[in-house]
Length: 535
Image 1 (tube, rainbow, N blue to C red):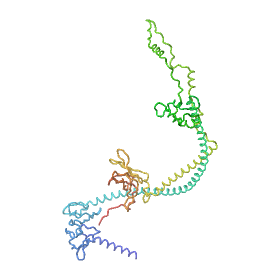
Image 2 (cartoon, rainbow, N blue to C red; image 1 turned 90 degrees about the vertical axis):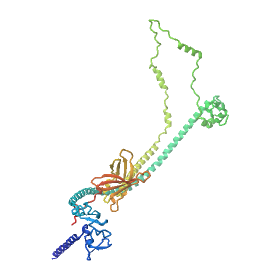
Image 3 (cartoon, one colour; image 1 turned 135 degrees about the vertical axis):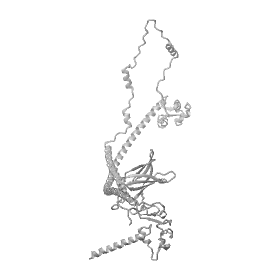
Image 4 (tube, rainbow, N blue to C red; image 1 turned 180 degrees about the horizontal axis):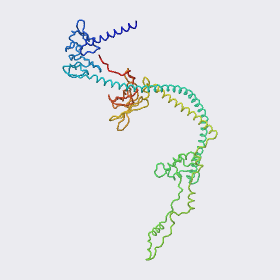
């Protein structure tokens, strides 16, 4: 009984709803939509109230081709009011509103032709054909969006999976780092403890070597000074006097070709003569760089002028030609080129000076003693262990930093845009090749070749508040001459592939890229979207 009563109630309600719709449809003036029909019913006193409430007019003034209301609402079906609107029902297609000025203008603006009087012009009703094409396009768009959304879901799942892996890896590395940091500190302490005795032993060895070198050098200086003293002491009186200095032209200070007594005194520290000890201690350090050892080469032998003349005459004598029929005299035998005495060659080889191995050894620091070698080996081992552990700690810190950067990056509400990280896409027009690397940078380079110009580095998501993830901003690119820094906004749209579609420069140094990607595809509305048919 209860169910029968409810059924009867719904039938009555449906009848009332349909009746009101039919009445509204029958009573609505031309150019009025069904949703506005109730506002165009005559009042009990037979008047119509302008929709802006400014005035009341007799109902028969509606659509009388004269504009009575300030807002033009009394003429929805004529062109009388310049600010009026005409509603195209367009059954089977999409309803629309057009300006009242287009009503009865001889052009069919509504696909159902209701904007033109049938008697003036015949309009073909092509709303069904347009509706069919619209539904086909909507189906195609929905299919593409659905396919893209399936890819987006895959990217989202992958992004979330990688996100969880990064979190797990981060926790693992942080735990490992705590242990490794303690190990590094212990190895650093061990290294310092091993290096201390090593440094002490090496310094001791170095000091001994430096002292030995200084001793050898001092000995060489004394020997050189002794040799120079003997060479300068030409009279053998065990002292150097002014005349013996004057005899050496290298002591000429003013380079006039003569060593004066004043110049000689200057070299001898204003003394008339100096003994051996004074020369070695005071004089030699100042003159050793300018003193020249006397030459030991023998001068060429003097040639007797008369002998030289005879030699020239002998060379100018002519050889008498042989008598007729007589062979020329053979020339004196000359040793053939390339022949030489083996013994002489061997003697020459023996005369070549070879470096003394002992002299070479004297310039090299002696090897460390066994105890020092063991200290060095121990310190080397401690350094190696520390360096290996410290290097591993740095690698671990780098990985942690990379993970932190990844986790802090906003890859979309479901991490779907993470798939674009570390990828780059290019688009080429007539002049430039544009490059877009998501979450990194944007750039351009001349198509004909040349250097790359930065258009900006990753900034943030820059879409409107209700659609934040529709636009990306890349900022602080290369500065424009006498202008701002370059920047680029990347507008994202749904597509089946990741593709950079276009590039433009809406404002000076402000670029715009259009990029399609499945990451931008959202789930389409259920069922095939169809145009709303007004009854």
